[in-house]
Image 1 (cartoon, rainbow, N blue to C red):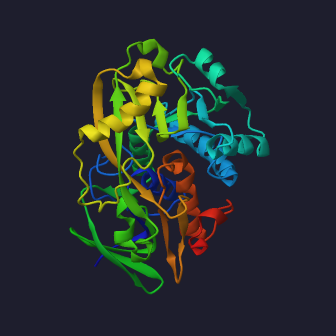
Image 2: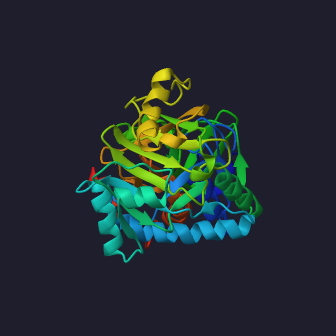
Amino acid sequence: MADRFDCIVIGVGGMGSSAVHNLAKRGQRVLGLEKFDIPHTEGSSHGVNRIIRLAYYEDSSYVPLLRRAYEMWNEIESIAGEQLLYKVGSIDTAPSGHEVFEGSLESCLEHDIPHEVLNHQQINDRFPGYQMPTGQMGLYQKDGGFVLSERAIVAYVNAAIAAGAEIHARESVVKWETEGDGVRVFTDRSEYTADRLVITAGAWAAGMVPSLEELAVPERQVLAWLQPEEPALFAPENFPVFNAFFEEGRYYGFPVFGIPGFKIGRYHHLEEVVYPDHVDRGVTQEDEDILRAAAARYFPKANGTLMTLKTCMFTNTPDEHFVIDVLPDTPQVSVAAGFSGHGFKFASVVGELLGDLAIDGKTNHNIDLLRLNRF
């Protein structure tokens, strides 16, 4: 006989760990299945930290979810007894008129988010690690910062286990199928049945839900840590995280924290669509040069010795908004996928959303923007 659960969660990374915890704390008998270690470096959540920002140019309808995410990060910090969210401030910067700046400003005005508008010289004077060019505008928001992504997964997994969840690492799901009103999940070790299934498989989502093949597309991404020539300028108290559009592309970055070096990445690094089991995890001189191009021009005092160069993955939807929904015609299965390089900050509230969908089939949060039927 297969082991029976109220809910099975496939993928115990950022979203899955939060979902397992949320379900367990609501009294569900829940099983989390992870293909790799917990945490691991094969997916999208490794590399110390991820940006969180309340000003949100991508769509202002994310802001209520963000506010709830901040509350939920505070909750898991209290449970874990560990700081996971660091408010060092955030700067969304772009030339005047560009959506990165204008959309961030609009979201602040619409949702009464405290903020400051800074021109290029004001940014440079206040935060000397920045060297913004003439015409570059910035929106500074004091509540922005970063979340410790790997530590957050550990915190959620430990809390989930304490709440009664069962979690298996290094156990790959081979297939799943509906069985009456429930599901049966087959792995390389065993098989399990449940009333509900939650799929949070990251870059492997399309392998679990074939209808996502065109809607959750993995992409190779690269992150660099560069040793600053003046480290004090890039300490957390002196250097807000940034989301920046420059003529070289859209970049993001962090102060020195956790491991040596100022951290920088470029959105859609080389626009390389990949298969997650066959992604090239090596790094090249071209990868480094692309990241140094922005560091040298806009953060020149950070453009020192290379300390670390890592690959990870984005999983992109066509419109770069997430997919969070119940599968059509399969109400016992819900999915969260396609976080398009800006999802981790929401992991805390995504767990709540997935708990709602699994238990109630609906949520009081507004996720119209994220529904599958938009495609």
